Image (cartoon, rainbow, N blue to C red; front, side):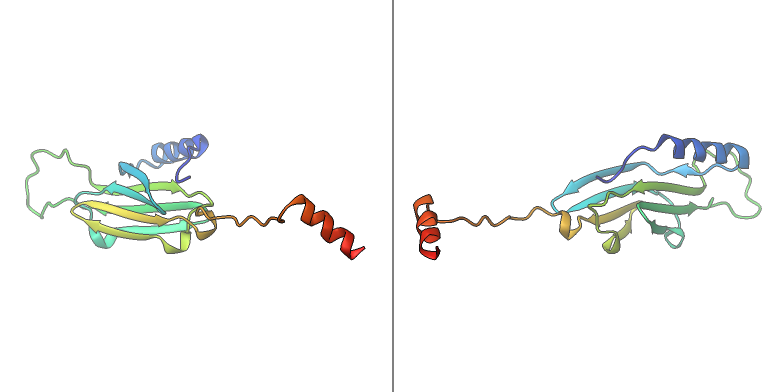
Length: 145
């Protein structure tokens, strides 16, 4: 499992935004499983590539990035509709994911995060041992007696 909803954490985030007077925007996310890995795509158009920060703490992957306005000193602003400032997103990682081998690539405004499935969580074959027939098992028991 890649994500789960934790309503109290969301209430805490909203309260912090309202009380601090700052607004941290959430980047939209698409996530899916492809074979033995999860792919997560976050839209971060215009984000400064050097500002993108990914951290993993216990079962939470946090992504932060900043987009600064492209306004120079002396410019007369007419309209500002594009969001600027800090963007943040938290993804809750299940125990079946390999937190130590997460990778990320930022290309054309999209951050793609690859999260492998942990080895112990991958499907594997279980070997079944068996004894020939019931008669052979009885015969082997009587010979040893």
